[in-house]
Length: 115
Image 1 (cartoon, rainbow, N blue to C red):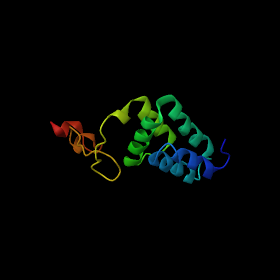
Image 2 (spheres, rainbow, N blue to C red; image 1 turned 90 degrees about the vertical axis):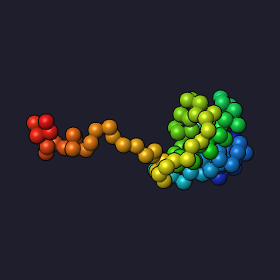
Image 3 (tube, helix red, strand yellow; image 1 turned 90 degrees about the horizontal axis):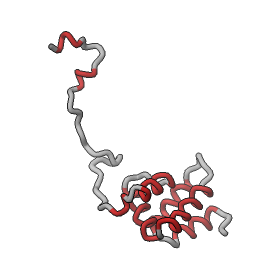
Image 4 (spheres, helix red, strand yellow; image 1 turned 45 degrees about the horizontal axis):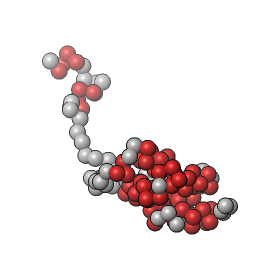
């Protein structure tokens, strides 16, 4: 069993390049100890297969959501089976517009003045 972060990243990389990149991203996050989420990421290969894990990690990287929870959610919802679309904005948010105009939500505008 790998007991260092570097060893875990190497182990994760053995499942695929994208898996290794997600593992590096998790380990680089200084807010949490990355050992446990990287081990959980590797365990996903047993439950879903290494090929699906690689596709899910590639998808998470594409949408800039490289983390254990994101990859697990992608696998659970079978999103790794869908084609990867290009996000229209760097943040990954699709461009959309509200059905109602913004003035409908402005608390300074009274409803009686809209009629």
